[in-house]
Length: 99
Picture 1 (cartoon, rainbow, N blue to C red):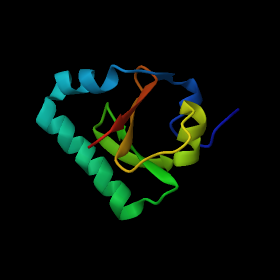
Picture 2 (cartoon, rainbow, N blue to C red):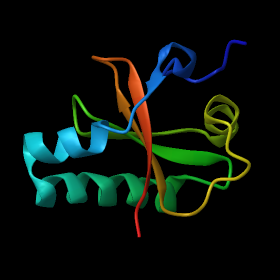
Picture 3 (spheres, rainbow, N blue to C red):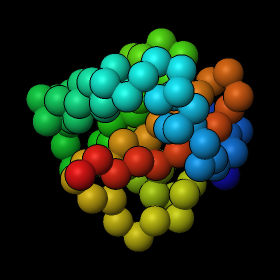
Picture 4 (cartoon, helix red, strand yellow):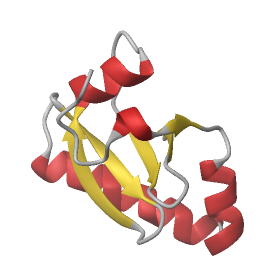
């Protein structure tokens, strides 16, 4: 099944190492700041139909359709504070919950 996400989720593997590797690369304070920026974008321009995406290679952020994420990862629902971490370099994603 092809999804409409520009992040090609169907080509990505699910990882548990993206977040720790990101922290090791840029430090905890900068990584936490990147997460806050993603959540701010969700609050300002998102809806219950979107989830913020943190793009590791650029520290950029975007919004993606939450149905695509739910379908690919297999979650029944997404909660506030959830962020999809995306690496285009290694084609991997990780779901993070910021508390």
